[in-house]
Amino acid sequence: MTEMTSRERILATLNGECADKLPFFHWWRHSQIGWAERESRNRGMGMCWSRPSHIKMMHNVEVTQIQDVSKLESVHRRIYKTPVGSIYIDEKRDPGVGQWKGQRSWRDVSPWKIERLIKKPEDYDVLKYMVEHTEYKPYYFPIEQAKKWLGDDGLVINILPHSPMQMLMIDWVGSEHGRFYIHYAKYQEKIEEVYEAISESYENLYEIAAESPADAVIFGDNMDGVLVNPKLFEKYFMPEYEKCARVLHEHGKLMGTHMDGRVGVLKDLIAKCPQDFIEGLHPPPMGDLPISEALSAWTDKVILMGYPGSVYALGPEEVKRHSLDILRSVIPGERLIIEMSTENIVSNENLLMLTSILENANLPLTEEGIDRIERTLGFI
Image (cartoon, rainbow, N blue to C red):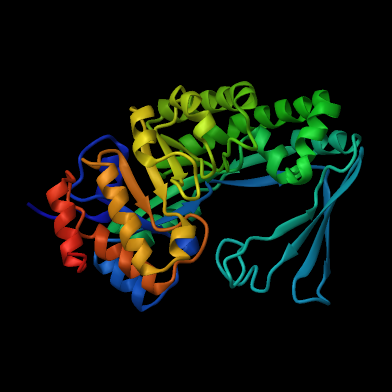
């Protein structure tokens, strides 16, 4: 039997079919290019790209930028001027942002928002104006380009922005020091007005994604049950997921959501959601939901498991132990794909150790097969 390519393994699993081996891949945005990455890919590790299918334009909004580059970590201010007022956001950037991948620094750190767009009640009116004057246009070149480059080595996934309420929670209001919940208690009507405006503006975005050349689409949320309690999830997130999924599924597209936080409290609600896959799920010790429990709860969904960075921090020996435990917990290995990282760069040593295990994870997984991998690694 001919061995499957990385793309074939990933797509087979996403479509509920059986692959020859447990699929595993690295995200390009976190991948170091070099000998260890090349060796891991030669031994079965796939590569995945997340790219947009749209360009965003704002009408009657003037944007200016000011940079303070007098410190190692520069501060960048973006000012949005509209007919109804102005708002601004400040970002602190580590060295290398704009020179490395995906707006990350040399250390793989994203810009940190130190001043949010929303600071006072009247800022919501300006933000609403901006949203209502935002236009999305299809632009498929980034996906087409990446598909040509990647070939059968992996998958190109269409990435969408945060869902409407997470745009407010994470990007515009912020969650630090309880900011969002304080604003929600004081200005719920204004928050919901902006939420509805975003939701309406996204309708065209879903159509653009549905007609893109990508095989799958990810809603770029950062779902965490501490930030998003079940009441908020059911009221603001589930209806938006349903709306997006209807459009994508009509065009034969697979839909997933990035849920990389502590989602145990949301487990039963997630089971009712229309997603075909849950991406970035982190098991303990970083998350609070074991992969085996998630697979049992979400019987109609594929899980893309983000490998816990806290395990990597303990070195290759702990990676061996933890990875074998994971494999034993998910026998026979159905509906599971392993992501080498969803957050940060992985050291060469850890990358090669995880590859040494997963390259031999033939499906279906069995106790005997995992014991064989363990012996190969010198455990017994």
